[in-house]
Image: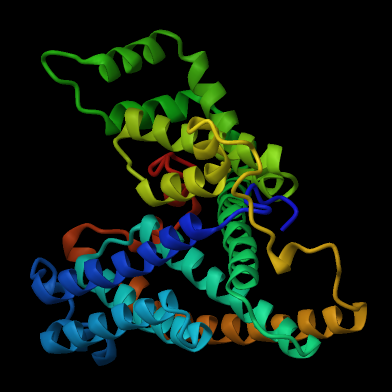
Length: 360
């Protein structure tokens, strides 16, 4: 939590965005499973469990309503850990079912769900620590640990994306010619070019910039661990992440709104910025949060809480891996061959990084 830019401030804005992610997932997956018929002819090989929501559409509506109710309960702080886990499980099931139906997997969905789940794990850690210290839970402490977990997940996604590039392609990923070819293939050239089209023309005229962009991509992603080091570095790396996604959007039309939104919200001290814009004193509205008081829990209690949290993580990973093993034949065994969709490629780190079709 030492890297948080919200130290001594309310985290209501970050919390609202995380809850918005959960609600958005519930609504969009319900709409896809209830109304989308484009992929129905391609699901005959899918397991019955994943076919249920779009073969029995009322089930999709009920699942969506349950997920939305769970988000509301988390927002009301009514058993947030229990309802958060229930909501995450429902959203994961709906997401996999929608992926089978459409043949498309959105990275926005993955990072939004990951941040939401991490927030819940942060609350669980805070409450386990409170239980062991025999003190009452507080919303400020829940939010502080929730933010710490969510930003940790956020940074880990980028480090993982950069690592996957190195493992799959090595330093050849930084070759500017490959990246430039990919950008050009993804761009539509209109008869009357606009500002962004002139930007691409400039890039084509100066191909060395493509190498700079490729190297910057790896640097930003692998260096995302610095997002967790200190508030100044969080602001710097948050700006780099937003700029990276905006550049990908301009050059390739790949829009990752939710990562950009989370980086904007979590990387800057908005309460302090707003106070300054209103002409208030810097610390006029600052709040003191019990989670960030100078006193630290006894080492034995902290170690026990960490052990318990690691057990939760191991169980979660075990369940996730078991589910993936059960479903891998669905997503990699010719299910989408007739539609020309390579879902395994869509799950790769290159898709997650933004430059989705870069050759290896």
